[in-house]
Structure formats: structure tokens, C-alpha cells
Amino acid sequence: PKTVERGRPLEQTLGAVRRRIRAYVAVEGFARVVAICCLAFWIALGADWLFEPASRVRLAFVVTVGLVTVVAFYRLFLRRTFARIADRNVAILLERRFRNLDDSLLTTIDHPELLKKRRGKEPADAQVSSSARSMLDATRREAREKLADAHIGDLFDPVPRRRAIAAAILLMGSIAGYAFGAPSLFRLGVDRLAGITDELYP
Image 1 (tube, one colour):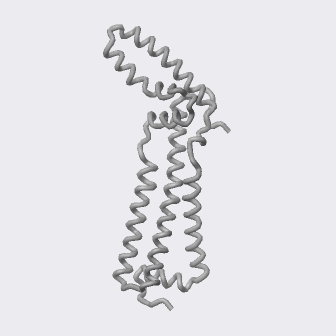
Image 2 (cartoon, one colour):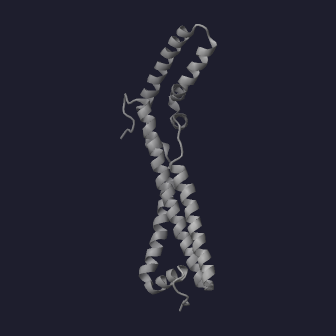
Image 3 (cartoon, one colour):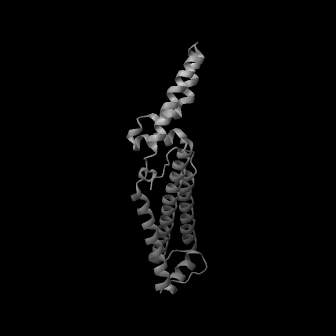
């Protein structure tokens, strides 16, 4: 189904695109954070099983995993999901994807700044303003009509998001499988990493 309705105000269209961008980034970023966290857990558990280090070294493993998770959560999820996305950035994205817009959307977004510059330079202020406003109204209508046939979903490449989700599911599944398949070993590994016990692996 079309995601842009005919006659829909451009501001609403830009807002809808902005929400879709945030949703895409949030899902992909969160999935990547989960995958990184699971991978870090496996690395820490594997290193502990291979070397059976002292408790202070295991504590360093846990602290490192925690720091990696926090940094990944900030960089891949928080910073990207809540980044400021200006109308002009959204317009550029739409113009690049839907070439038939022919800069009509970007011109509409830039209209207030251009109009101020003309008013400051030319003495026939009212006439220039009226003429410019008429042209820009036509451009705005053109952009709105062309966007009516656009599919917002076409802006996004689903492959990176699918890969991130698949990696998160596989890694979480591997941990769950290990926990159910060898519960005693899993519990011992977790207890060692948590510093609860110094018992060696069998």
C-alpha cells in the first residue's frame, strides 16, 4: 500500500519519514547491541574455560563485557535513534531516492531562507514576495503530488536490518541451547564469571 496519501501536508509526510527512519535505526541498532553482547559473553566464557584464570582476571572479563555493551548501546542505539533529523535532511533523502521530485521538495523546504534573502536585497519587496510566493506554492503542490505515488518503505535497505536480527537470534539461541543442553556447565561458567565460585571446570 502507498504510504503517502494524496493531499497529505508535506509536514506530515516528512514526519512520517522521520519516524520510519528512527524505527529502522532503533531495530537494527538494538539487534546489533544484543548480538555484540552475546558474542562478548561467549568470548569471556571461552577464555575462562580455556585458561581458568584467577578471580580478578575473570572480574576484568566481566567489566570489559559490560563496558563493551554500554558503548555499543550508546553508539549503535541511543545516539543514532535519537539523533536530530532536520526536515532538509529528510528532503535530501527523498530527493535522492525519488528522482522525479526534481528538487521541488528541497526548494519548498528551503523557501523561507530564500525569501528572506530576496526581501533584504531588492527594494520592490511586496512584488518580489508575491511573485516568489506564487512560484513556491506551485512548487509545493508539485512536490506533494509527486510524493503521493512514493512508497516510504523503498527508502530503506532491509538487508542490514535482517542480518542484525538474524545474528542476534542465532547468538541468543546458541546461549539458550547451551544453557538447556549442559545446564551444569553453563551454571558453573556463569558462577565463575560472576565471582561466585572458584571451582574448576570438570
